[in-house]
Amino acid sequence: MSNKDLRSFLKEAEAHGELARIKEHLDPKFQASAVLAKLEKEERYPACLFENVGDGAYPVVSNLFASRKRLALALGCEEPELNAVYREREDKRIEPVMVPDGPVQEVVLTGDDIDLTKFPILTHNALDAGPYVTCGASVTKDPDTGIRNIGVYRHQLHGKNKLGIHMSEASHVNYIYGKYEAQGKDMPIAITIGHHPAFYLGCLSFVPVGVDEYGVAGALMGAPLELVKCKTCDLEVPADAEIVLEGYVSATERQMEAPFGEFTTMYGGPHMYHVVTVTAITMRKMPIYLDCFSGHLDHQLLGGTGRLSVIYKTVRMACPTVKDVFMAPSGCCRMSCYVSIHKRHEGEAKNVIGAVLASDPFIKYVVVVDDDVNIFSDSAVILAIATRHHPEQDAFMIKNAKGHPLDPTAYNGYVVTKVGIDATKPLKDFPETVEVPGTDEVDLDRLLGGM
Ligand SMILES: Cc1cc2nc3c(=O)[nH]c(=O)nc-3n(C[C@H](O)[C@H](O)[C@H](O)COP(=O)(O)O)c2cc1C
Ligand SMILES: [Mn+2]
Image (cartoon, rainbow, N blue to C red; front, side, top):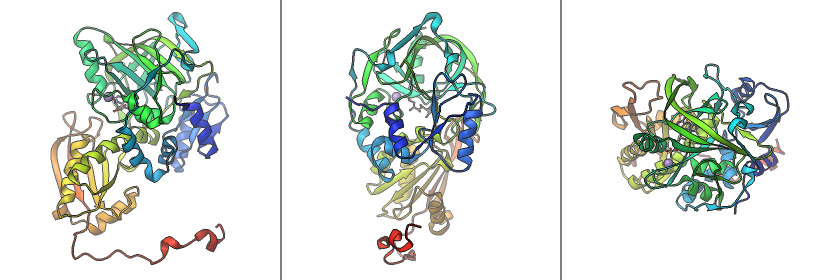
């Protein structure tokens, strides 16, 4: 049994100085997100607990995922170990268990009592089409296999019991929905809003279709996820969540949705997208509403962190001495990927680039560096490019490759150019990097008197 939920994590985050409480009254339209945007301008990324948003009925948490330090705290490790811990646990899935009831069903609202407008759903960016539910982990079931699938999809608020849903062609939910649609059937869905960040990191693992992400969530939380049966559909949701929206995605209904601030930091344009009809709201008596600051670091790191694990595992097939991989916020945690390797053979870095591009279709730039370069620092990677990279021999382009439809440079829907940069130094005849003997042994606290 896990005792981890959103509340337990907020306490932990506060004890570690990672939580800011904002007591002032704020409008859910732009005012809460303006606080997050101002913090971002100052390169400060605390998790924020807004205690008085809109009519003040429910507190709002946002920016929970906006720092790798906090993600490491969620997994109970230090920041430098975050990727390795994620990779290790992802492979040791812990299957969820059913329990008869749980806090998330303390309140059950159905029929005319359903009113999504009572939640403090934020509108983040100037041109967003309206308020969006941005931190819902949605469970659906493959109608052929009965296997669950979980992912986070954004939902524009369309009405008291109506939400939009955007199921991109790359998401498993799109494939699953296609099966219901082909039979003219609505797809049952249940959207979990508010749980421990390790739950979300597990739900966003980049595992293949047919793998129940709740098992990865359990592994990241260190104990089986406890599930309860939904009240109005044949699905299961975490007993310790804050809020669950049960319902279905109609086989036929579509509504205009977006523009919306995407992970690229730009807007995605409006489309006719699918619609969720909510058949029940279940929640705690005093639920906390969890938001994810879309188009910003919160969104980028939440979605990007799990992907690093699959990239690393694929690269390891090409290069057993890979040290780590990172998709930096400067590439919106999706479009550029840095890899550090202990190079043993000339040419190895080029094969690594191939492996990276094969593992994640969204990546556009791959930079491979030696293992003495800190891939978590853009400037260290750029220094390696400036000093160790010979563009004529060590850069290549793949034209007309499939990228991400949200890439503003994409044409014909998805088509982009991909670039590989080998910034590893040659194995022989290359100058040494400067180094000062004894650096690691210096005790700055003692010498500088705590300055
Ligand atoms: C905050 C956030 C919002 C997201 N919104 C969407 C979305 O609207 N549509 C989508 O297809 N994927 C979206 N994603 C990405 C998916 O959640 C992610 O690719 C997930 O692994 C998909 O799961 P699936 O392939 O099992 O369906 C979002 C991710 C995050 C972190
Ligand atoms: Mn999936």
